[in-house]
Image 1: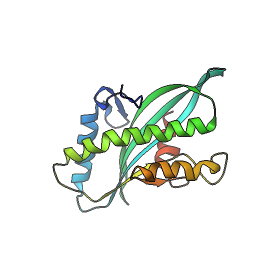
Image 2: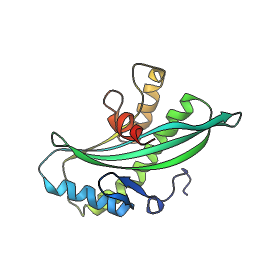
Image 3: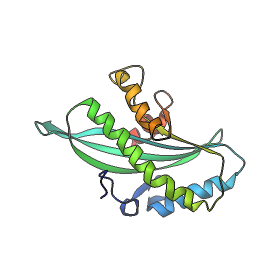
Image 4: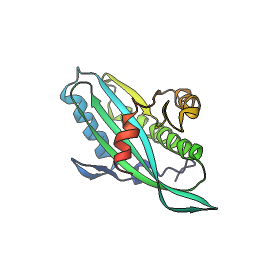
Length: 176
């Protein structure tokens, strides 16, 4: 594990409904192949994390199941996605949970994006990199929008919130 609590990507297994259990190199290969099928199309490369409580919580806090999804979306033509799961302990508040989700996406992106760019060998397909955050104007998370969007944009990424944050609020959520 590195200082962020994220295991090396080489040690993480990913899931895909289409391709089964994969390592990071296979995920990158499938994303590259998808980009190469229609190289002149526009794409979004999306990273989003959602979580759900597992078991009970006590004084020590709650345990949450974090699912990080990576999606490649060919605008107007569908896409593919992959996900990985991690358990985190000692979460006391909704704020801590949203921070954990956002930091998981940022830590994942900071490791994944350089590996992905290196694999492209100088080719630069037309894609936007987005971090999807599971917060929105309606509900208990509305007061946190500026904070977590600031965290994401401060790290150089495009931030999307509900209802546009389907990578977190729908895809990752589906596997928590």
